[in-house]
Image (cartoon, rainbow, N blue to C red):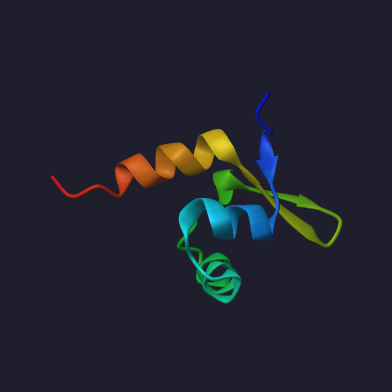
Length: 60
């Protein structure tokens, strides 16, 4: 069964993007807020919302 939430390391591997770039994207709000779940100080990312966001980024 696939995990619903990914941590920063898992998202980094999933997207093939360095962790520092992901933190920057979060701070600049380039990753939509509906993708991000904050558990205390920890950031988690909803896999389904990330997939939807990625599909919206495709060029037509």
